[in-house]
Structure formats: structure tokens, C-alpha cells
Image (cartoon, rainbow, N blue to C red):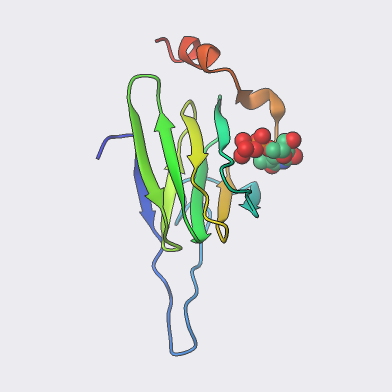
Length: 134
Ligand code: TYD
């Protein structure tokens, strides 16, 4: 696995009632959590993302269903299937990300290190390559 793919184990606190996962800022995930959002009801054939962030760090967890994640730092690309509520994918700053092949039941939970800021987005791939010096 390359340096691009960093997975965090989110162990389920299970008992005979079922499972529960707890995520704590600066413990389970390596930053303060300032924002949480989730993507669901993604239409068939729709891909999302296609941007990088200048400073934002995120952890993505597919709590139900699955999607295929593509990460790209300008020099290498990695793909992985996110399909477990007990695995969190760390997406560092300056990483281009694309999400593909959402299953109809997919709920993708994202924990973010900063509030929403459109100025932090790099939405053009050529601009991204310039920023990372490729
Ligand atoms: P966008 O970042 O384009 O989604 P993705 O890249 O994951 O496909 O966000 C879609 C819309 O939602 C866009 O208009 C910005 C808005 N948005 C917020 O207002 N707050 C947020 O925290 C996020 C992630 C998006």
C-alpha cells in the first residue's frame, strides 16, 4: 500500500444488541473535528469529489454500502473500495480525490478538520498539479 492510503481502525464496541463505533477528535482521528457531513442518495452512475484541498484534512467512513475512492497526490494514484463502517480513510491536504461507484445504500460520513471554506478548494486538476509542483 502506498503512503496515500492511510486507514484508521474504528473498532466496533459490540454487545448482544449490535454494534457502536465511537470517534474522538485528536484520538481516533488525528485532528480537531470542526465539521461533519454525509453523502447519501447518490444517483446511479454519479461520481463526486474531483477536487483537492489546500489545508483541509478529512476522514471518510462508509457507514453503509460502498464506494470506490481514488486518491492522487500528483505523482501517484491509489484506488480502494471503502465498504466498512469500521475503517476510516484519512484524506490529507493536497490530495485529489474522486468518489465513484456509490451503491444505492451508500452513506459516506466525512469528518473534517475545518469549517466549510470554498477558498480552500482546488477544483481544477491542472491547477492542482501546479500547486503540488508536478
Ligand atoms: P462539493 O464539495 O462539491 O461535493 P463533492 O465534492 O463531495 O462532490 O459540495 C456540494 C455542495 O455542497 C456545494 O455547493 C458546496 C456545499 N457544501 C457545503 O455547503 N458545506 C460543506 O461542508 C460541503 C462539503 C459542501
